[in-house]
Image (cartoon, rainbow, N blue to C red):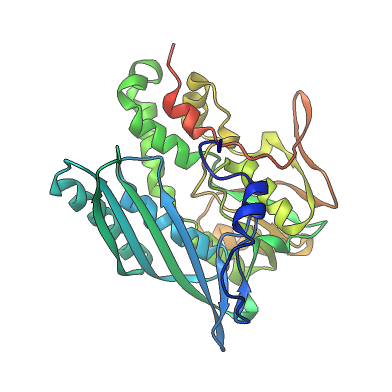
Length: 334
């Protein structure tokens, strides 16, 4: 029986990645653990293609769909340009819901300069809430391509914004009425507003332009810990991270405490993980400051081992990626 959430890596490699159709020479990078988007050689430049669904939220899903897919393209160093959307709606919904979804998608696309060029819209009898799937296409100069698999020992690890911001926003919206008496209206309203911070396009492109960035990754399912593990697998390296330096907003921390979940394992679109050459740290700091993006230096890439250090000692991580959003959406509140 498969678990809820992203299919485990070993099953992806055994069942999915071995069946990818024709082998074409123009495919520079196809399906791989931790890699956010495919890369196709178009002669003078690369085309970057990413697909992601929005399944954990029932409101704001058009907004999420655009930004989550744009992020996967941007961490390749590419500019997001074209998007298709598949919108699946549950039965007995009004036109108003569809209007809300496409209006949110339109607003996000306008913000990024992305054109929505097609897709599909359908009412499905067995769905309990809407699902939106996006495919984003962008392009990048060949010399500026970045992958998740480019990190090397000695690189410095950076993170932007704060862990679990997407998950906190979703939980605050989905469980608002249940949480309001426990954590307060102000906490929930501020957490809901984290959805306005979902894009990493600005910081990803600024880093790629301003310094020697070796790898970038968009930590979605599994949160920051999951993102670090995926980057480690893709690059065949380890990492040593100071857990105290990973920023977590007080709103996220409070919501997670009430629900008994780990904010570092909470879905984290809007957060950028990047590794930079140790000699390029000053350039990276300048690029992010000039872009007006908050960031933290949290650790370094090492030859092997995945270690998060904390007040209670070292935590050694394996390959397992755990997403806590599903627990947070279902767990009863005492």
